[in-house]
Image: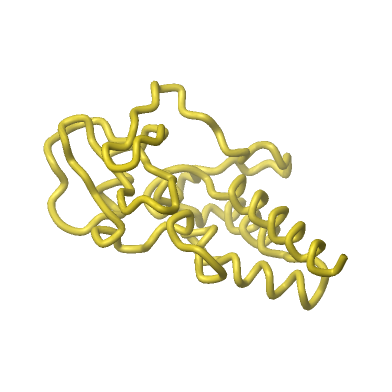
Length: 164
């Protein structure tokens, strides 16, 4: 990719999970608020015809089948997706990085074997090389590194509880 969607500095908070500036809209299926998503992301992530031009929002609730909902009534569920979002997939198989296909299970495996994981550093190296395309590969349409770091912390905490 010639232009990266992710910052290239080593500052950890560069890819922190950002809140959308647009007003969240509630999911018509479960009623939870969600951030806006660019129609380009929705078109890249879903199968079939994209509804007429409209605003889209993301539903991150794991229990809800809806992934995207639109301002003119468009509704895309898990079955409409090319890749099932990690936030809709419980357990180890859930993806946390869609450009390079890193999963929670990979992170957990590295943490168990080595006490550390290199997944965030590998993603950062790929970002610096200009190889990410989060705007079309990540269902949220933005850099995954904030979510990856959050997943690492949660998995590490879960493993620490098992040990104690």
